[in-house]
Image 1: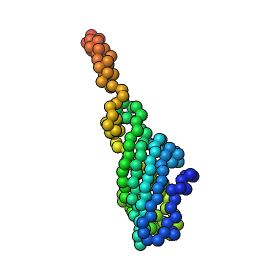
Image 2: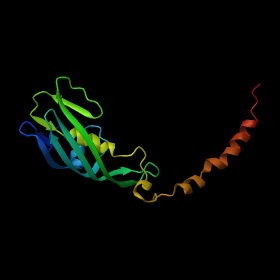
Image 3: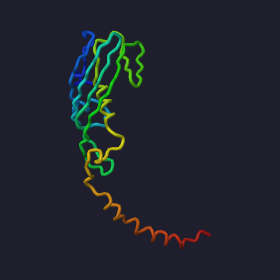
Image 4: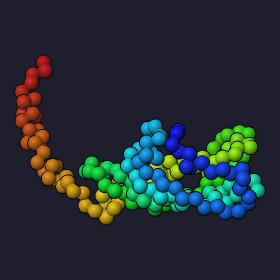
Length: 168
């Protein structure tokens, strides 16, 4: 994924301690990932990386807006995001990941945090997104559509026509 070099941290030169980084995840950032659910966003990421003797502890603070559609009325809306995530990164010969620990190869010189930012941004999106999440009303009144449903008027005539069918 070219264009994501700004998200690579040279960890081999770091001494034990806490380091802070600021990143931006916008439309161009998400275009670098195939099959992304986020097309438009403006997110600021503050990363506090603490290097310890055997691992790295990463604290992500994500804030900003993600453009998405309302699941109720299908209109676009800006979903405000403000979340924190914690991740441990360890060196290992086996590159298995679990929920809270990510493993990188022994002797790695750099740590690419773009994938972590991408995944945490997607975790900020609720399962059901509605205008109520942003303290708004849906601009389209769906009750008007339901009240004017023509299929309700036609249902009686359909059953009347089926009553006269002789199945014998």
